[in-house]
Length: 84
Image 1 (spheres, rainbow, N blue to C red):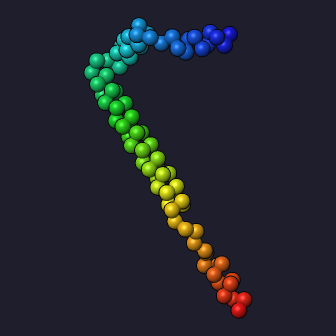
Image 2: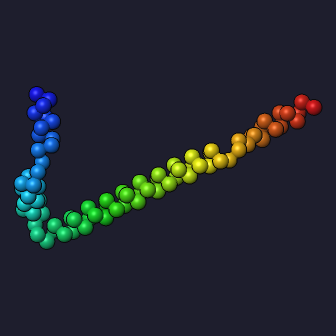
Image 3: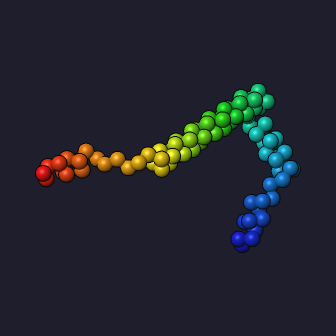
């Protein structure tokens, strides 16, 4: 049974794409299709920008932690000076 599932998952070719396009065209109409495509494009672009920004933040945080020396906290300095 699992072989059938895997086969169906990868059996999405050119004819199936045309069928899906025609169904979408019938559901949304020719006038709404460009708006739908534009909205998908904008959301894809926004997703890519957010992903790139997230990756930059992670890289920057990794760089800061590896290049900056570990600083002692003020409470550590206070405890060493209080013992004298």
